[in-house]
Length: 539
Image 1 (tube, one colour):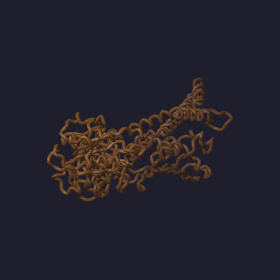
Image 2 (cartoon, rainbow, N blue to C red; image 1 turned 90 degrees about the horizontal axis):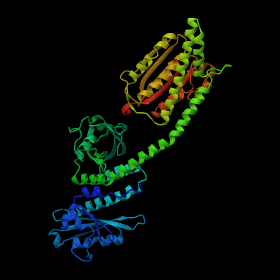
Image 3 (cartoon, helix red, strand yellow; image 1 turned 30 degrees about the horizontal axis):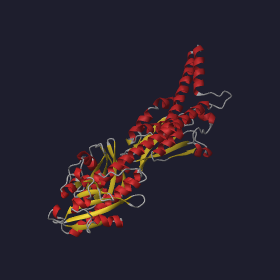
Image 4 (cartoon, rainbow, N blue to C red; image 1 turned 30 degrees about the vertical axis):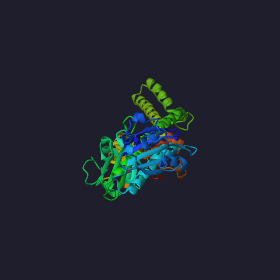
């Protein structure tokens, strides 16, 4: 972000007093409306004029000019002056330098405020100096921030520092939701997992109002829809200030919040400080975010050819792998083709139906292989949309698909799902793929008349799902390898049962991509696979 141009528009629009940018030759480069009003000159006429002419009414800088001191010391300077042409009041002048890469003064931020009616003067001076120095520090830091995450963390910490709040955090607008990912002073995991649907909560209220929102008592304020009282109460926060970040086109970028754990009302000065911070940094955030998304898209496109090559290689590998270790090595398509050719000339109805069934099974097997490979490719590309999933419903739905196979092999399947099991956070389609694969294996490697047990229960902040069978088991030496791609415990047995050698590898990748774990236990009388998924909302 070192090439990021300085965007002073936010500061000019939000600072209440007079504000101008001055070069090292005392020329006014830019000024806001309050500055022009105080000196009695239009904004257009101010540009290019010497600051000592319009402020002090002189042809040379007076001894009291703080700008001269700033140019010499490279530090903030101030002076209280009375200038007849400005009016009868007393004015506070402050100057603060903006340095270049060589640590030389590039330009100076100059403020002017009437302080005749402001008491105490010292307190106003202190706050004004802090605000001015904060603006200059913000400008310096947003240029030097190496990436978006560093920039957002700087903004969050600066917001907390400027307001003295107990906590601060930032959420990005992601389509129809606000997702919070940067925090300072937040303690609970549940709060960090807050995701606001469009139109709900304080964040969306601030975005829709497009202005700062001050909340003195969150639990008595009735302006917000679905305010998530339990999560906020658990975090201990009571008072909030939320400021929306908008792009140059007026589109919402995100929301910056500060909050206190006691009932307080954020002051006008605190609101102004946060609005100034938002105005000064929103352009940089928008620029950095767009740059980051462009870079991510480029990297995905860059790896697309490699992913395609890997997928093709996997398909070729799989289709060349023998269905059984016999003197005739066949692929699923070869089996299907041969069975159909034999069936065409077979007159015996029973044998013809057997050949047709063999062809259908081979094609189904081929489709399972390709399905596993495609799912693996999707996992490599990170394609998974998470949602809150009812595990009981998914288990019921997937297990019902296997009823014909259970009847055929005289198997019994039971399910045992914990009552009131919390929702899991998962990709619905990929979760079904995991269950189908594990149940399919439990059927294929079971004994005729055997049993299958599917269980689900909560275990801490995760949901634990297991699929157990009473089948032939897996040799102890082979257990660590069952999740390897193309690894088969017993090639002849595995292939005779239709295993592709890819399914469990894909299952493992899916589970781990969700933040869960998968394991297997086996003995000669059966095998049990067990995997975990995060509970929605962190439990």
